[in-house]
Every structure is written in C-alpha cells, then in structure tokens.
Length: 416
Image (cartoon, rainbow, N blue to C red):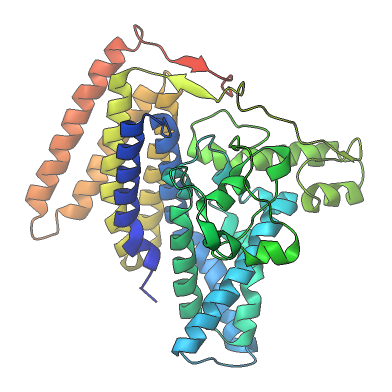
C-alpha cells in the first residue's frame, strides 16, 4: 500500500501556512513565533520519520487481526468507504478521548498540546508514539472486515480534515457548529482553561462529543498549552518529557496498585497523596508564554536549515521503502539530530555550533553518497557540497558573534 493522502497533502499544508502567516503579518495578530513554529514542524517531521519504524508494528497488528479474525470482508464500494469514514471517526474519538483520560496514553499525545500558540503549524506537531497507544481503538474496524488500505486512506483524510481547524482566523461557522468539528470547537480542545480541559475530542464530526457528554462550546478565548509547560524547544525531549514524569510518579508510588493508578488514571493523579491535583486556573491577560530571544542571524540560519531539511526529508519518506534498514536508521538519526539542534540554537546552547558543524559535514557526506550514483549525481552532489560550505561559513560567522548576542529567556526558565 503506497498511497498515503497525507504525503500528497504536505505541499498544501505549507501553502496554507504561508497564507495564514501572510494574513497574520498583515493583520498584526501575532499568531506565529519562529521558535515555536520550527519546533512544531520539527516534531511533525521527526514523527513521520519515526513512523516508518513504528507502523511496522501498528499496521502489522491491524493486518494480522483483519486477516485472521475478520467476521466479514467488506468490498471497496462507495458505501463501504462512507461507512469506513464514519466508523474511523468514531474510533478516533474513543482513541483521542482515552489519550486524554489515561495517563500512559497521554504521554503519547501530549506533544500535540504543548505549543502555547494556535495556528496551522500546531496541526503538524505530532507525537512519535501516539499510534502505539491508540492502535487498539481501531481493532473493531479490522474485526468488521475493513482492510488495511481502507484504514490508511480514511485515516489520512480524517487527519487532513483536522489540519484546517487549527486556526484563530476562522470564527464560529453557524449551523456547521452543530455537527462538524470546527476551529471554534478545536480551540476549546487546545485550551488549558479548567472548563476546557478534556473537551471536544472529535476528529471530523462533533456529534460524538455531543452524544457522549464531552462537548464544550467556546466562550472566553482559550489559553493554549498544557498545565505543566515543558519550557523547551527540543522536539525530541518533547516526546519524552511526560515519560520522565511518569517514571518519577512510579518511583514515589508505594504499592503495585498505586503504580497501576499512575499509569491508567487520568493525568494529575498523585499516588503518594492519593488525590488528583486540581487544574490550575489561568488568566489570559497575565499569562506569560515561554519564549527565548536570539539574534536575527540565528533565526535566519535555523529557518534555512529547516527548509533544507524538508527538501531532503520528503524524497526520503517517499523512497524509504526501497532502502535497507541500516540506511533508514542512519538517515533517521541525522534528521533527529538536526531537529534537536534547532532547539538548542533557539535555547542559546553553546554546544549547538560544534554539533552543527559536525552535522553539516556528515549530512553532506551521506547525501553525496546517495546522490552520486544517479544520472545527475555529480551536479547534485556539487550543489549539496556548495550548500554545506555556505552553511559552514555562515555558522563560523554566527559562532564569532554569539558572545555579543546571547539568548535571553522570557516567560520561564530552561530545563538544564
């Protein structure tokens, strides 16, 4: 199964973000910050790469259940695709709700909620491990006889729909608010206000929230993010921060039953005190977002490197099925190092410059190794080498000026 609607939609995602950024700048609404946006996109890029390895497990499980235990084998007809889309959306609601109401599963979803902004880039901020925890929710589709192809395609379109609702530029949408998930409904879902926590879990249709008692209309404007911010621009740490919290909670839990409660109760359970911590109130007027400030040159450098990373990652995602596992792991590791170093630059880490120099050399070497056998390999390799050299010169200049323009920290302290 090579068709993936999400891969086809990626250019349109970036086009829509470009339009939203232009409107944002024109209206001076300040919906975007470069450090936050690059972190969101880096989380999405790395999630797609990690998914290459994890989907072997998640889709493999679905395929095994469908092949061996399906009650029916539903054909690909117009009506079966409609039923599959609605059924997938219901399974998505269950999976999404459990991702908020079970602490262990929250660790696989929290990444998507960490941004303190709300714009289209947030839609692409995805967790590496969410698919592992939510895969069992789709087993009913396999048992009923919807094959893996239908799961992938309707799931892809479900996620594509959810992209556009991550915006503040669209107000309430009249009658559509009754049965469709809309930007207004999803803004509530991303709010950390106590009244908004664990509400509006819908994917495409808000009817599930209305039916099962988790609906909340948008009233005051939400404050976005999670109740315990990670205060970091590191997209890899973003995927592991909550697991560390769970580890600390398990250490403090005195009995096995308490440890199980840590894993399977809602987030916020304190095993030592045997209570739920109350959701802290938040006032948008005085709430201070985590932020850091670095020079324009550093911002420009990271933006250029992210563009180059995207240009390199898209063909890798398309061609990875033809590669060996060792090559996949090497490229995945380099992509992971790249996005981590973006965060280190934004956080003003002194070692980011040394890591970046080594990364540029290694990435250029790997790219040339893959490109040389191609028909235009010499020219492509020369272009890669030139870009690496330009980047190294720019990096050398940045390193020479970093002492004059240290990062400043706003709205929180960095994890050390």
